[in-house]
Each structure stands twice: as C-alpha cells, then as structure tokens.
Image 1 (tube, rainbow, N blue to C red):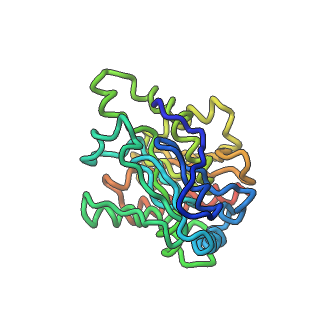
Image 2 (cartoon, helix red, strand yellow):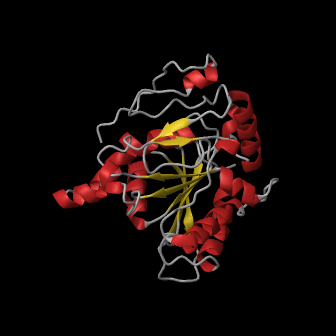
Image 3 (tube, rainbow, N blue to C red):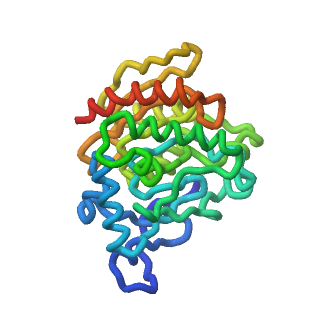
Length: 283
C-alpha cells in the first residue's frame, strides 16, 4: 500500500517523555509504549491488562496512538476483531487509497472507545457486543467482562483497497495476503493481543496463508464445533504475532460475521465454548 511502518518520534507541546513517544510523522503508526517500559500493558490476564491501562492513562495524561482508518478501539487490546476491509462505510471509497487520510486516535483504559457502529442500528451493535462478551467470558475474569469488553477490544482490517482493486480487476486475495506483511502485522505486533477473532473466510484465507508461509504458527487445534454445520469452520491456532510477547496469540475464525446473520445465542455461545481450550493451550 506504499505506507512505511518505520516508527518516528516527534516533539509535542508537553515535555513528558511518554507524550513525546506517542507522536509520529504523517502516514505512520505511532510508536507504542514498549513492552520493556510498560510490560503490564501486555500481560495475558485481561483484568491485569485493564488495571495497567488505567494506571498508564492516569500517569501519562490520556496518551493516544495514531492508527489508520478502519482500525480503532483500544491501544493494548486483549481482543482484536479482524475483518477483510472497513465495509460499506461512506468514507471507504474516499480513504481506501490512503487509510491515513482519516486516521483514528486510539487510547488506553478510560481513554479507549467501545466498539459501536452508527450504521446498521442497535441490532448490529447487539451482535458485536455478544461476540465481544463471548470472548471475554471464555475464561474466568477477575473484573466484570462487560467492563473489559468495552475497554480492551480493537478492530483491524486486512486492507482498505477492496473496492478499487475489484474495479481494476486485481486479485483481491493476493492483495489481502500482501497486506498482512506490509499493513496488518506491524499493527498486531504493536497491539500484542491475547485473542484474535477473524470475522470471515475472506479474511481468514489470506491471513492463515501468510502466517503459515512465514512460520508464525506455533500450534493448531482441531476446529471448534458449531451446532449449525453450514456455518464456516471454526479454525483454531496459536500464532506468534509479536516476537517479544511471552505467549502466542489465540487465533480463531468466527462462524459468521456479526454484521450479517449472527445469532447472539447460537453463534456467540459457539465462540465462547471453542475459545476456552485455545486459551488454555497458550500456557
């Protein structure tokens, strides 16, 4: 996509070293708090990760990360929801050739935003909420899963160019696979999630192909069971997305996209049940 992911440091009004690190040149990911400096931001336990984010928020004065269009939520997410593209937003065609043109500002703890959509109404938001809550309920949590899902979730996408490339007749699957290395993996290495839920086959196929060809898969579990056999197979694997993270990320394909015919009872329950053994295998 022609976007450089070299991290840059720029001066800001505040002399705080933390605030200075959070700035960046236009068109680039901002530099995240390093795992050496803020290790608790990236621990496996969701409740401890949230507590660390609250302390960091208070100490650093609402620090922000700069993420490209279509990626938003939390800067140190326990859960990342991965789609193939930002969808049918009216902004999509304007910014798909330059995802930094309408970048998002991502925060930590109380400064993070809950994943909600203006388009599609409350039914769509209820589906997404059910999926997030299912992930955080797959293991026992010290803090309320409702709180955790609202402040420790991020959304990312493989690419922002689907519509343009389709018009040109390009191979969209090949584009998505290339974007894993040039676009997505630097973001995931920054966020260091514990769980990555892949929201469709369109996202799963190029992502799985990329991590397999680059030797990032640490273990594969049998697909999760789903009571509706016509749903997508719930593939499960452990992937080392960040080399400095002490555990591999639990990656699973969701049976159906929550913006489509998602069942808050059947599909969300299947995700929760299938994710439990995958999280247990991380240790």
